[in-house]
Amino acid sequence: MLKAGRLWALGTMSGTSLDGVDAALIETDGHEIFAFGETAYRAYSDAERGVLTAALGRWPGQDVAQAEAVVMAAHREVLQGFERGALIGFHGQTLAHEPRGRGTHQIGDGAALAEALGRAVVWDFRSADIELGGQGAPLAPFYHFACARYIGADAPLAFLNLGGVGNITWVDPRKARPEDEGALLAFDTGPANAPINDVMMARRGEPFDRDGRLAKVGNVVDGALELFLDEPYFMQMPPKSLDRDAFADMIGLVGELSDADAVATLTGMVAAAVLRGMEHCPTPPERMLVTGGGRHNPVMMEMLSVALDCPVEPVEAVGLDGDMLEAQAFGYLAVRVARGLPTSARGTTGVRAAVSGGILSKPEV
Image (cartoon, rainbow, N blue to C red; front, side, top):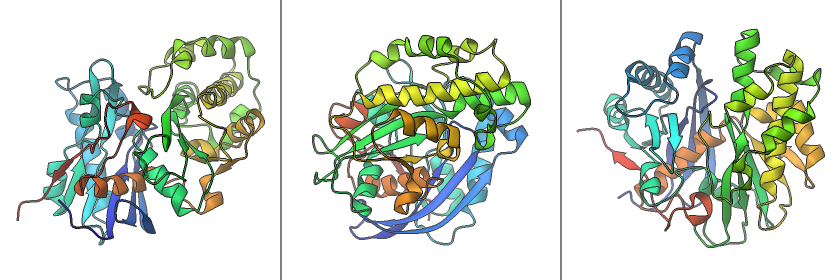
């Protein structure tokens, strides 16, 4: 087990948007955030993204060798550029997620990465949580709690991550620890950028709706939006989580629409899903801080601002880095795992008891 004290940890994230690998240094003792360090980003090429897209939905035992080779090469490349960071938090790449069925599947070999880089690596963050009855996701909420304390919040607030899937963390920073009852409530709100990106690629050959330009000139079609909100998922009580393609049928709902109307409607669906999710918050948050790629979409941000009763701001408004927040989270969680501290609890994943989820692999001397 890692000795107590503050240290620099290096976290990575390759999300379901399939854009690339984020890496970020964070100084922490597994409780507090003391400082942020260098960051780096390694984009996936179109060919690499194609390999990863083809592997989505595959489970252990199915052919994922090419996809794993892409993930490992990209992580080695970006991590070799960091001199600091004795401990690495390696999330890997999620291909499939079915917590009440086959479990969860992240590709990437943390033990091999430890040998390649000569540094200790914490990985496989989700399996232990699922084995104890949890959803295995979202995992950033314990870090969100630390962020709320870092920025000096003194009232409940919410962090909204708009990546491939949307997830929200309601935080009460007045609690002593993230695992305390009532400190956190977290769950996936619904799809976010993934279906928009898929439609943009299929129709226009572009990876995403840059700056919401297409959504801005389109119209939200109410009939499609209402059918989307009829999905049983929105009636489920949290904690709850989703696979990237759990709402694949929503693309069919906009199949007959023009490109602009289709993207505008999908963007409206993301905002509507968040609004539904807010109904589950124990008390209204004082503010909502948005991270992930969706915060760069002014149309999406405007829809959220109009729909919600609290200020909606990018996390940069409080001095945080929305591009690197999840990478930082896995550096922070790696320190917690190495010190035997919990990384999820009943309020974040529905796990039966607070659990420290992850494998610590050290390079052979």
